[in-house]
Length: 158
Length: 90
Picture 1 (cartoon, rainbow over the protein chains, first blue to last red):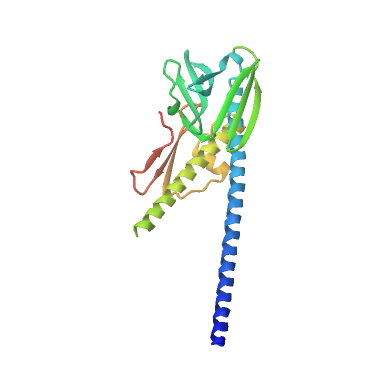
Picture 2 (cartoon, rainbow over the protein chains, first blue to last red; picture 1 turned 120 degrees about the vertical axis):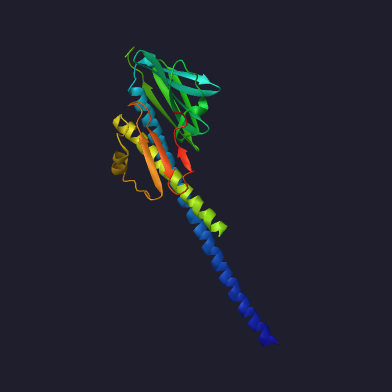
């Protein structure tokens, strides 16, 4: 009787040990995957920040005159407007964040601007823009990271 | 069997999404760095070393104007109904 009991305890001990090892292995794999995901997400966010900021900077620099760049607020969203003229017709490029996507839309001035019609460029949670003394301020938020960049708007008409 | 098929479809859809995302980022990055949009799809693929399954996907790259984001269309070849146009207006 005692011998049988000892055998059962032996089996149970080994079983518990194997279960414990399996749980530890799974928890290590889970923790590793979480760390990898967080690192990859941070890298992706940094890349999105850089691309979004550089893209808008380049857009602005190609139409750097202060009277070509305006910021308006439509339905609670800050919208960067870049005004241009082609073949004596006025167009405006709208850059804004809608539905957590940085969007761009180029339409003639005689057409109405619809936020949802813009082309989604890349995921950005929030974009706040202001122009103060010919200084354009862009504040991006992606996830829990926020970054601000300033662009000086030079000159008058292009 | 249906689950395996669904999983495969989902994987292909993910690949399509990733390809779209990467192409758009590459176009934006080129514009941000060089002040111009890439002149062709080959330029993006060569410059950013992008590889994709050409038997499964077809990519159309259409330039409208020098200051406009090009139209990028990724088409899943198998099952022609699954066509997604990236540019919502055109």
